[in-house]
Length: 266
Image (cartoon, rainbow, N blue to C red):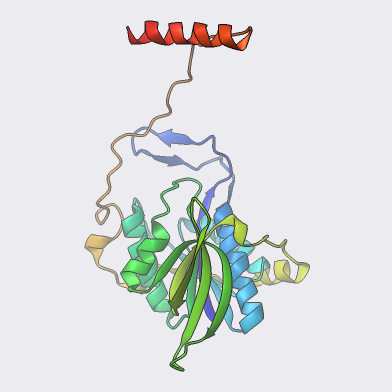
């Protein structure tokens, strides 16, 4: 089974600063890590490889330093890492990012499954995974909490996957033919720690770097030019001030609170 896991390198801290001129994150001086949700996607991909055989290719789009995330993924069981990196891709929104990553998937070639984390911690849009599936025209199942089975289809052609998809109240059981794309939640597994053998492999692994010349994508669909979403302004809301702590018996506190609300609405 050939599996592609899409990951993203994100700032380790939530205390990020914004460049007021470009409205982009200031990453200099901030330690970066693999997006936490992508760690569960990687673990699930490695587990499937261990069960069914095949290989796991890890794909990311980002600046040159994102190579460190790919090497970490290899130390955790992935077989190869691919970095999509080019100034032409800078400024991509989720649509342009998913389009670019879909182009990289096509260059990789035949695959059975793409696994992504449910969302990135620095954007929280949950759009890139579904966007990749849309560009590739393959089935998608989001918020997967468990892969129940992968079995040959009844017609004898291809494979059929059965998964549990998390909902606000309970879960759905969905069957989908492969190839397909899944986005997973943290309930699906417990990520492993890197092994010594894995770390040694990651240290010497050759990371493929693909740019626009390799992917030959539509220039009007990549980077800032190909991004229909434009960020006009990003700012941190000012801290809340004022407030009042109410103490006493519950009936007294409720009465005081009601009077305060009436005064605010008056």
